[in-house]
Length: 298
Figure 1 (cartoon, rainbow, N blue to C red):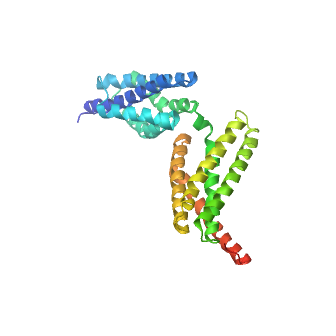
Figure 2 (cartoon, one colour):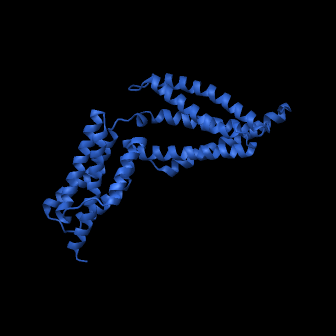
Figure 3 (tube, rainbow, N blue to C red):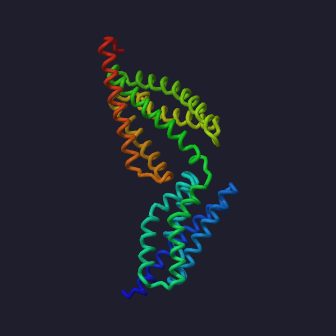
């Protein structure tokens, strides 16, 4: 295929990609109530539209196929539940490959000097400007991501240790569940109070909101993880079920935070899972030690 035809073919794909992003941001802006967020989304849409117009010079007019329109609607729905920051950053995870391809076109010698300068600016937008704009979006979930992580992760670690400790101390799954529930309720209030005191020392945070988010996330996690024990499942089966639920919750949250914070998902998740296993082992051994020293087992 001649290089000119190759450029037209590639430009069509790039134009469709930029048009898709532009329409997505524009639709998000229409649904946004926060004026500052709306302005940022409109700015991002305009930026993507200018990129689309550049590639359109080589590809001609393009429009979204029905499959792309369905994907656009799906992402708009996702943005309502998962947030705009997560949705945009998830969409931008392929930007590294896009920039690489843009650089290949830049170095191909097919563009005139004027178009080369425009493409250099587009590459700069893709590498820096879009991420900077996304990070300025204000969302409750992102603003309180630390409090959510604190409440959820601490509950998982503490409850896993308690449940594993009772595995070596009692054969009753209901007793284990009740113990976990009692510890969890008490600890949720303690964590909420600690989060309140800590956030008072940090500027720009609402101590009350931080405390509520931490406590609520803690309690929700406690209820989820104690449910298999309170349901009366055999103790070992209840523990395994509870751990599986913990790993699923951790995987979902680790992926969410990895996308929002631009981190590696597998590294974060592996660290969290390793920490849970360590706590479970220590909790079980401590339960066995207490039973051996006291000679008491309900």
